[in-house]
Length: 256
Image 1 (tube, helix red, strand yellow):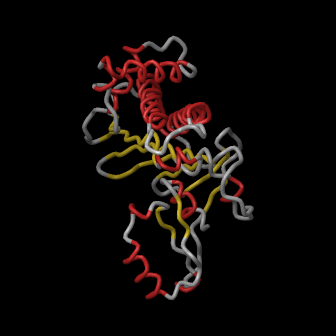
Image 2 (cartoon, rainbow, N blue to C red):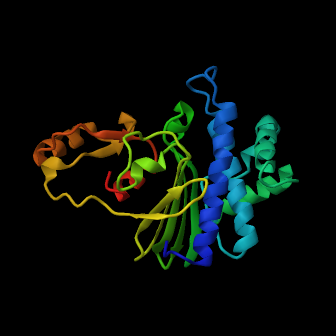
Image 3 (cartoon, rainbow, N blue to C red):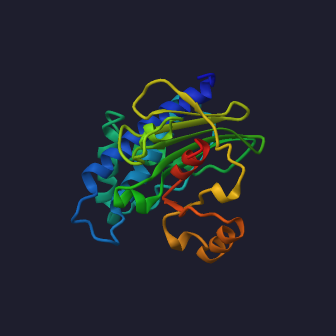
């Protein structure tokens, strides 16, 4: 892999750690007994992953702002004491000695505004996929001067073998996939738990009829009528691929 920089090393490490954390939360809190409307596992995973990335950013780039989705205001209320206790417990597996006050402070690293240089994180993208045991992603990017300089995706349930040039047919399972890209240096993938990076490229097919549409799994997240019109206009024959989260962009980058 030719991508090397202190920022990229940080992003790879942070996303690997956060992906491992949310995978543990999913394994322990997402059970068959979970009701359809119970988003508590996602809430715990969101906050814990953002706290961990905030902590790691404090250590490596303490002056860099972080733009995230969460803040600790609700967690500091008596009603959310149990949720905060869970978040601290999961975060503490990766940051020994984590306390409620420290975890809230790390979460609030994500409350910064954007600027000339900042990091932005989506700690668990694809919440319904997370609860279903399907695709979801941890997403982290560095923005400088209004342009994304680098981005890293952790996809714990996306089999890295599927994305390789000679990849297999199965999409889910395996060790998961780590996707990294930097401006001008292409996109690269590796197993989430380590190993060599392989460069990937988008498909070189030019006939629209041979294309396959990649869209959201949830029909509420897309305009199915307009998509149908597009498919008809292009003459696409293959059925669309529905996928939760930014994991779909990993497939797109790899020409799948």
